[in-house]
Length: 69
Image (cartoon, rainbow, N blue to C red; front, side, top):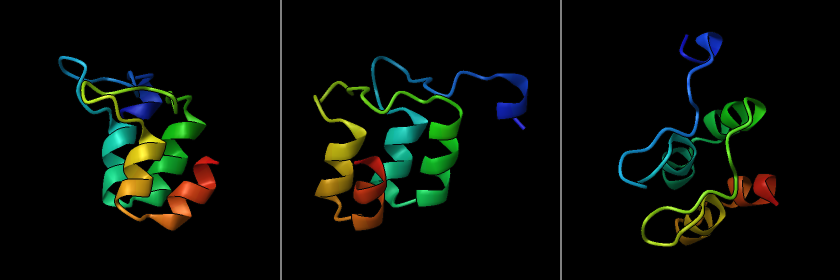
């Protein structure tokens, strides 16, 4: 519903995790695909310096890592 109303898919508080980062961290591949389809920033960096790809690797979410590459 939010995506239909052009919500900011890269919203974060104080440079914290975005919906894409949280989805990568938790292994939600379908949500990752949906967010990227709506132009979420795959290169975004959170306040710890991590990217969605980094957290996917760290959490061993192989399918998401392969998708992001």
